[in-house]
Length: 158
Image (cartoon, rainbow, N blue to C red; front, top):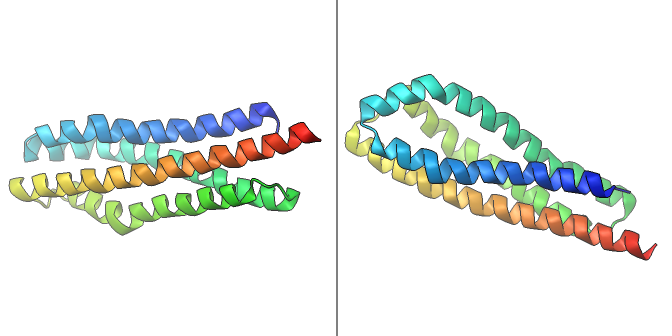
């Protein structure tokens, strides 16, 4: 049985991840779009690796939560298992966003490969894809919470 502390911790970690994604979309992207190509590429060269490391670790930890929770729910025959599975599938989807779109696009930023107009277009696309990913992440969080509250309701009956 998961304690209340563990449940809150899992939700808090996932919420920090989602919040960081919202921050990236709401603060970083508009800032990046305001920069000249030269300034953007300099910024990305200087801060891109650190941003990448931060998000890599946070994304892996966040995605692991519903995946491990799904296994836990199935092993304990919890009624929250299907919510956990949906959250896990959505977590895999938000990881796939990176490999399908962001990895290659971010590499173009490291290579300073885009001219001014092309960079603006790519950053606009980057923003739209990012916000689509955030929607998937929020849905994953909702189903994560549902899986934990469903499980919590069962423990109250026992």
